[in-house]
Image (cartoon, rainbow, N blue to C red; front, side):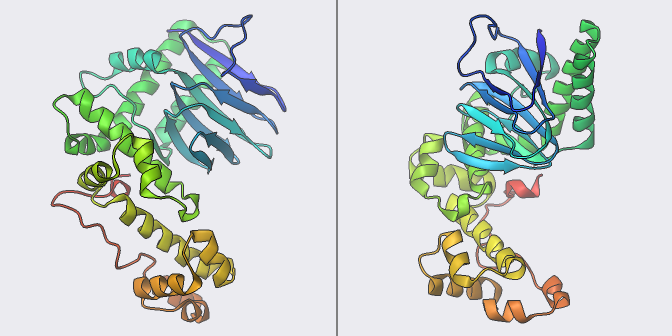
Length: 316
């Protein structure tokens, strides 16, 4: 398995969506390292990629929107994906064609699911150390055999870290494991899109299009797998963000209303009071000790889960 190490220079923009005939991409994996201001990277559609900010924030942009990656580890299988930084930051990305990843993961799967499921979560220390070690070996031009072993160990660790998602695979419809994994991949993309926020300006039609399902089908599958519908998930996160903005930002209520996508200020105030039993004015007048004792979770948007179902956040 060929692995190419590609450090990015200051202000360099590497666009792999337009391959250079003088330097063909091939079918191997690419390990990118950036440590300078203004470095940018664009990956072509169909590539599976692993992203880890080591210091600072990483700005990512896909066909469905942009978001900031900080501290978390991201497994992405998007359309074309663009990464950039507006300040000095250090980050690693391991990327390549999906078929290449599949062949590599097959050897590390031991008969279990050999797909990396799209996900964003706090990077475990073991994974971070393995990815950094692989980058150092590639930078120092270590023996190819040792780099190959380190890469396989990294893949095995990645598969081990997603075993908690196997329960979700079992909840998906499909006669074969491959079909159930494909269903979960689609639902996880919707889940990530909701978690990224987009300031509450998401609707069911957009999410269903993202998963290539009808709205009704998406609602049913999403509730079976995650224990709540997409709309309930959006409402829960939006009210949690509302609590944070009211407590910490100092923004006027009218600006919070607009930022979170509520129809009107009165609609926001009613939803906030219904969720937390307090008005925004009461919350802002509470002492810090009182805020710590108050529940930051909305009470009226609990998932209507079937027996045994838990939201993904409970598994991470």
